[in-house]
Amino acid sequence: MKKNKITSCLKLFLAMFKIGLFTFGGGYAMVAVFENEFVSNKKWIEQEEFTDLIAIAESTPGPIAINSATYIGYKVAGVLGSIFATLGMIMPSLIVICIISLFFNAFLQITLVAKAFKGIQACVAFLIISAGIKMFLKSKKTVFSCVVFACVCLSVILCALFSVKFSSINYILIGAGLGLLVYLISYANEKMKLKSQKNVGKEEEK
Image (tube, rainbow, N blue to C red):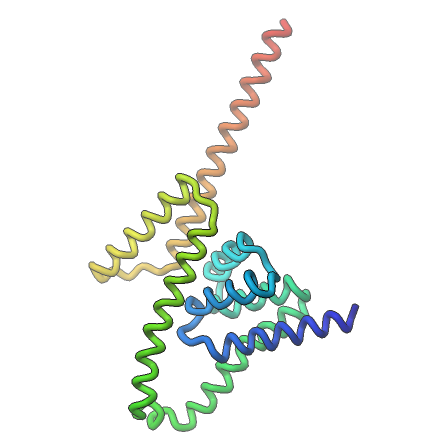
């Protein structure tokens, strides 16, 4: 049992290290890679759980990639798994930044590096859009979720057009508040229906 747990921890470390080393563009760009690696290939988490994970990782303090890695590690191998997964995610960035910091100015002036980063930026944009589309297509669609989605898209476009700064955290918090409000309303309606049914049953007994 202990050997299996250590093996799982090593697998987590290597998987996260690979993603951290070869994925550019930060946490959002890693979402599509996470989904492909841990939902489709390794099947460590379910699609619905992954969607919830991204929302939680974004709304909690810290980078989304590290938060996601910590959660997946805990899901697979407990506390030890979360430690190995988190270390695997941060080690590549730490190593690369330490190396680049030694010759940072010279590094940025290399023409090949500048051209490469332009290509990376286009790739990152595709990864973010791809992850968003996949999550939308695979998530449960209700009137409420579609309305929230449309409102957020419209709000993002308007904020970009009019140069209004609005944090993505605010979108998540507002969405959570609306979801809670809808739940409370539906819960209250169910209680009212049950109460009315009991009253009708009592009247029929009389």
